[in-house]
Amino acid sequence: MRTLKHSRQREAIKEFLMTRTDHPTADIVYDNLRNEFPNISLGTVYRNLALLSEIGEIQKLTTGTGADRFDGNINPHYHFICKECHCVQDLKMDTMDALTEEASKHFDGKLDGHLAYFYGTCGDCIKKS
Image 1 (cartoon, rainbow, N blue to C red):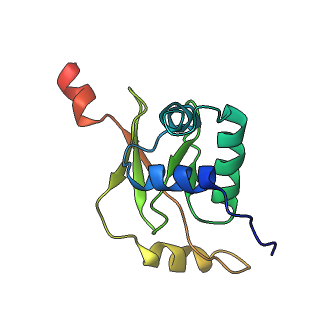
Image 2 (cartoon, rainbow, N blue to C red; image 1 turned 60 degrees about the vertical axis):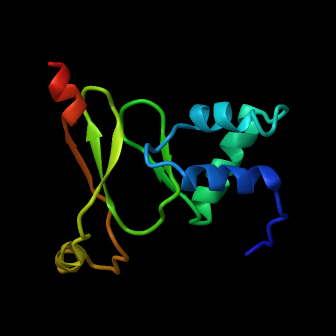
């Protein structure tokens, strides 16, 4: 594995994501980091988000609706995606290791874990309708 050169911008991206629970898009990360780094480019943000995701320091969430979202919480957990406003929220529940174990019974290989997205309508959207 290659050694990464330290980058203040990359560290700022990671720190920003650690303070958020709304799973921001790259554009939101970019808009917020421009205060600290006025000359940062959107391309730099995208490259660093991809790198941080690739090396496992953040999670990239591909929700199927709109832009990818990013999560600074790399601990195993589940997500809820609203089909109305497309918000992404953490579900406060234990992960089900038994699900991976059960899936392993039906797979000729080694499973390391699983991801699960739950879909529905969030409380805010229910209140609006």
